[in-house]
View 1: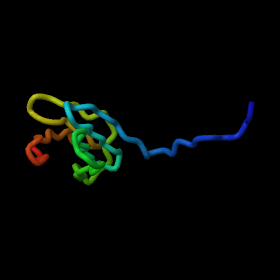
View 2 (view 1 turned 90 degrees about the horizontal axis):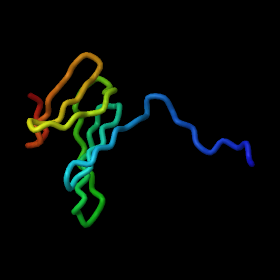
View 3 (view 1 turned 180 degrees about the vertical axis):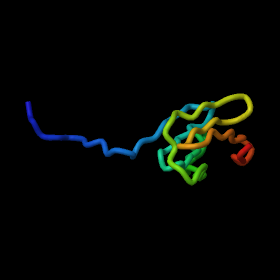
Length: 85
């Protein structure tokens, strides 16, 4: 057995991954939401910045949109262009 370190998790560099039908949503703690279409011929994520604050909780998909929690706000984003409500 080796005592060599193989992986170091850096603080504040995390992302939550959610499968949502035929797409994957990845919300990084820097408030960037990447939408990845599973039917696409190539890997081409679409990125959206959802807040000027860090996000820190798992996003919650609802019938009305996506709930995103930042340090001081809880926002509801619609899936039609990811507009904040």
